[in-house]
Length: 248
Image 1 (cartoon, helix red, strand yellow):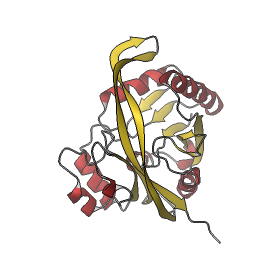
Image 2 (cartoon, rainbow, N blue to C red):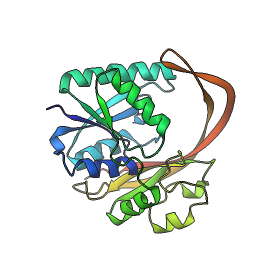
Image 3 (cartoon, helix red, strand yellow):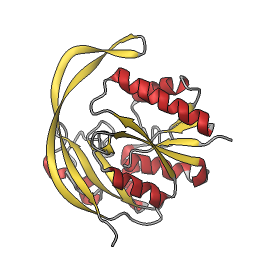
Image 4 (cartoon, one colour):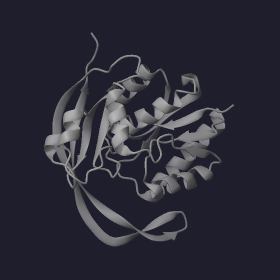
């Protein structure tokens, strides 16, 4: 029987999905898979340092594999690098299933399933269509601990950067913001909880603002690459740097 490739972001939704998978799957049958910006040595988009990603894998007791990405890949480059890396892992490990922590973004799920079909594996979504308010309360009630590491300023202010996911955080969320951040409102780093063998130590460093130009995708496709419309806009993000605490 082949292994499960678990798409691990290091955040809240990944942790909840892995919690579900571990109810029926042994840790040795799972491989964590994370996209990493090789220029900066950080998890793509979230900006979490590689040292803290490896600390999660060590505490989980699950093997980690990575996809190394250039600083700013376009969609064609990303798809090609992802397909090549998946193909290698499928052949080496006889992987049959890839697991994701997506909740309700149908277009994202369809995109993932299309890409997986190219290498002959299927996708599973353990927390799909779960109510996000119920999910976030389950996350807290189960004893998970997480810090917000990336904030989209279109939805939340800088004061949310670095905050803990707890009851006071939920009370302070503005109307219209998904409590699980499923629309990209925020990303988190989970450092403790029932799936971990021990908590991960870190200190909170500097919070910085970065701006990226976004190109909206059109509904048309050219081959395997989505064409982009002419509508561009700048989106700002606040990143809180988490600093690993080295053991003496």
